Length: 70
Image (tube, rainbow, N blue to C red; front, side, top):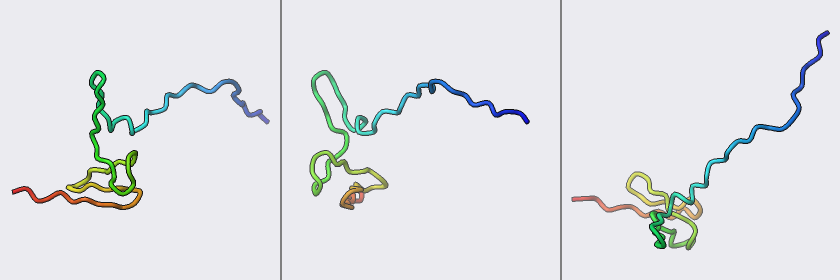
């Protein structure tokens, strides 16, 4: 019977992807601008998702619909 070969040692380092929250801000010099809107019910820190003509909060299910364009 052949013995099973088991690898031992350090694992290869894998870089983790950066958090999505940093994509919600734009920094120009010392000025910081928010690209998304905060949820009016949950308060600062909870962003509204922009999808198919509406803004939606995944935490409290608050929804804002965008008006029809003429």
